[in-house]
Image (tube, rainbow, N blue to C red; front, side, top):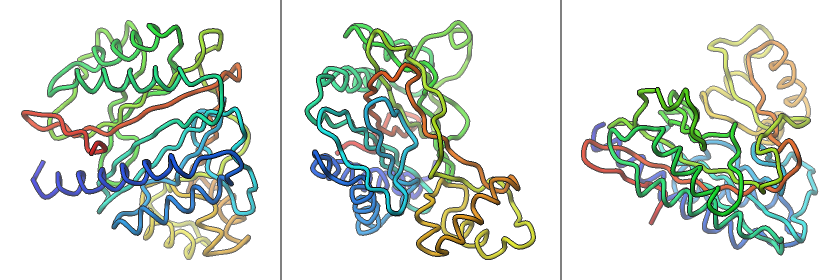
Length: 301
């Protein structure tokens, strides 16, 4: 990877880290989720980046892929765990970072476990280290606290304009992973993200109802969709985007077209992911860039 590209990843990381730090002060009892997300997305732009995906804000048993819609009046409840996942990109080079904020819940130790699992993983990651070794560290750390990792949520490789590219980084050891040759390769970028739930939960996520996050999956527009297709392609390329972003530019007609584009398989939906037994979930995440000699955690100061 050339020095210029590394600089883009580092800049994106600084932006994402600054924004997720701001998020901690925004998340408080009674705050409207829509206001939190739109303020954070505006902050990404103010700092010189663009959202790599809509800010995700997930409460309690909702694990991921929730972003508010226009008119959404959902507010942060007391006694909740609130996960805020921020992605920023600079010329397509992505940084992905997440924190969990405890708003008067009884599950603060889940956050401690998620953050320590992430820290211990980051300590062990190095060029050519096996993926399975990092997965084992994450799982053992979470279980040390008496909790469960979410087995079907993983970290993931990042590439230009692609949020889930190639290699995955599971949060648990498995026999298949143990015989895999997958390693942290120089010149590649990865998001490491432990998800943690309580011991008596199932420790898996399932698709919930509805979706407000989408991604373009077709290279050409079908007839009648040219304007909205071109808008999506020019603004987001192959990155996820929010329903509300489309509605702000195209009105309700844009939402109707978006649903038809899903039917036409031009666009895919990201379903909201919910812990199967409705157990509370905490998340922690950083982005790492692997060089020949070192690991840069782009989303750390």
